Each structure stands twice: as C-alpha cells, then as structure tokens.
Length: 231
Length: 231
DNA sequence: TCGATGCTTCGGCTATCATCGAACTATGAA
DNA sequence: TTCATAGTTCGATGATAGCCGAAGCATCGA
Image (tube, rainbow over the protein chains, first blue to last red):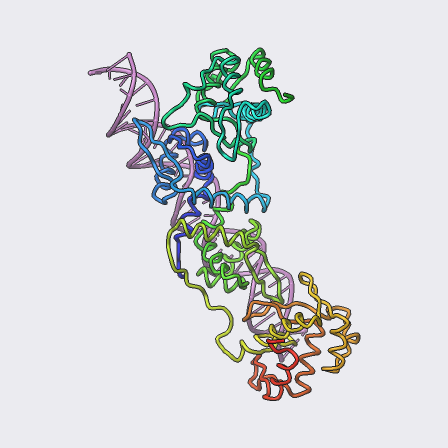
C-alpha cells in the first residue's frame, strides 16, 4: 500500500551477494579499484561496473578517479556501521557463508590481497609480529616499533622510513575474509610481499586472475623461521 | 567462497518492498497478525505467509501463536536498530504507521477473549496482579502465588485449587488484540470473568456477535479498587 | 457436528535482474 | 602513432523469486 521503498532499495543493494562482497571488501576503510572489487566479488568487470553504478546511485559508495583507475570507498562511516549491524544479526541467526570452491584450500592458505599477503599465512604473520613486538596495535591503528624497524632492515632489507606514502598508511590492519582476523596491509605489507617474491620465497599463481600465492619449500622454511606459529 | 556472517541474505530479506513494509510496520514494537501484515504490505495472505516464513527463518521476526491467529514481532531490538540505521542511510523522514486494533472504543476498553477479559481493562488487571504479587510470571508461564490464592478466595470467592483442568492451564498469558500486551487467560481468567458477571460488575453486550463487555458503574468502582492502575 | 475464519502449501505464471560476450571510450606507456 | 590497460555500455540469456488462485489444515463459534 504505502510503499516507502527507500529503505528496501538500500537493503536490496546490500542484498545482492556480489554487491555485498564488494561492500564488505570496502569495510577495511580502504578505497579499491573497480577491477579489484570485481575480483573480490568473483564477477567480470562488466557486471561489477553495473553494480558499482547502482551502489553509487544509492549513496553507499563514492568514487574517486585517479588516472585510469576508479577508486571506490564507502561514502560514510555510517554505512560501515549498518553493515556491521547486519553482520551481527546474520551471525546471531547462524547464517554463515558455507560455499567453498575447489581452489579454496590454497586460497585460504595464502593469497594476494591487493598487494600484500593474506590468508592463513598472512594472519599468522601479523600475529607473530605482534608477539615479537615488531608492531604495536591500538584498535585499528598499527605502527612499527623501533625493534620492528631493525628487524625489517636486518632480516628483509626493508627501509621502513622509505615506506611513507601520501595516500596510504605504512601499516594497516586488513580484515581477512577467510580467517576473519587481521593481516598486515599498508605499504609495509606490500613491501614485505614484494620482498618475499624477490627472494623467491613465494610467487603468485601462474593462472591469470588467480589470487593464490604459492610458497617454495625454502621460502616456507624461511618464512616459518621469521614468523612461525610457535614464536 | 567467503567465510563469515552472510549479511547479504539478511539484507535481501529487508530488500523486498513487501517484507520491508512488514518490518517497518513491526517497528512500533507491537505484534501484528499475518493478515494485518499482509494488508500492510498490500499483498495476499498466501504471499505474506511465504514472506513471513522467510523472515522467521532469517531470525528477523518471531511468531507467537494465539488461537488461529499468528502474531509476529521483531525478534530483537537490534533488528529495529539496524532498520533505523538503514532509514538513516536512506535519509528520509516520516514513516506513518498502521492503525492496529478495533476502531470501536468500547471494544478496546473491555471485551471477551474466548471466555476471559481482554482489552484495556484486561491488560490493566494482569498488570495490577503482577504488581500486587498475586501472580508470578517467568517468560510465558504464569502461576498464582500463595497470596494470590488467598486474594482470590477472599475477594472473589474463587477456589484456585478447583481450577485445575486436564487440558488447560490455570494461568496463561494471552496477547491482547488491541493493546498488544498480555492479559490473563486460562481457567483462572475464565473464572474471574464469570465472577465479574455473577457479581453484575460486568455483562456482555446484548448485540449478537458483539464481544464488547460493559461494566456497570458499581462494577467499575469495585474492579478499580482491586485492580486499579495506581495500585 | 458443521460452517467460518486465519493461515499455509502447492503449482504455474511472470517480471526482474544478475550475468557475460562483444564492442566502445579513456587514460597511460612506448 | 600504436598498443595495453581500466572501465563502461549494450544486448541477449537465464535463473531467481515474487505473486496469486486453488486447495488443504487448524482453530474457533454455535
């Protein structure tokens, strides 16, 4: 009768799995490109473009054009709050995502999240860094300690002071979608992943579009020596 | 593919206009019947039944069966909070609300619900009985206290021990049609209404099919003395 | 017991919309 | 310029799901 479709339209936007995946990917607070969001949602760029246009029209996200990229971020912290509220209701109702694909185990173990390491190993790495007091975390903010800087220089030949970036934090907690815990993002997370690749400890999967990261036997050993679960 | 609470399923439930209208109708905190919700959403009872089943499965609403009616309410204040958050995002004002209950003021005030007193006075009576500690209520179950038994015997000449019935509880909380709060049902509720009638405090309306209960002037006074709002 | 009412289930129809292939625009790099 | 990458638009397709008529239960009132 009295159709007040305002709230239902917003909810319908979140109600589509692909769009929802995009939104949850943006809940880290970082802006992502259309392609990355497409990848995150597991859909083609064409489909993603359509979804992004709808989300933008609905006022849930805002674009920022940069070169030939289009970065999207949540338009307002309130949006994130509502999404978290929905997560609370969903969790209480016991509605967890259950679908798992064949490639899933490898993806859960180690994968690229934008430009840094994610998955089981990514979460494990940040855990270990916290235990070793290489980083200090207060709420969402993470910063490298003095000892952390020394560690980066000595063990990985990374100059932490050179990682400052105008639009990006050095350290950032990124919510891992498979582990549901944080891993390390930011320029440091990216630099570390770069170093792992350079050292041939790990390599991105050859398959195009794959986010899987494969560790070499030696790489796994060295990685475990630095960030092993026991340390 | 992803782990964690599946918020898109919940959002999709809210995303349908018909279901959304039902939910906003329930945001008053009152329980509504399936038919009322169907009317509110502008759909047939069959369709509404399907929607309500989905909302219930999603944990957004909870049913309470009452005779051949099925009352639904939001399962949790959190649900209302999220809906309000969505309204905030939709950035729209003024939501009207349905009128619930009978138009007839007399019917709202006092009426027969099967065989016991309902309406404003019925709700008021149970409220007062709780305040006077004549009954003890834990969740849905209500039972007469020792003091309650004495009260029934002395004030209303009702032998509570004689009210046990093989197929019916002595005390029962019954959801009130117009007030959307509980009043007292069960054999005790019926016995009390019988007593009110015998004492000529109240009488059912003469009109056939009417459920209105008319209190005499004296009856109203005596009733208020026992179950007045102030006590 | 019978009829009336509230609600649900079932089956089929239909509209919506997510999806992708193909083609197009725009920016950046060589 | 030419090529590559990022992103969009368009059209066709297919699956989902909302919708209602008809029929089936369940409960209440008489």
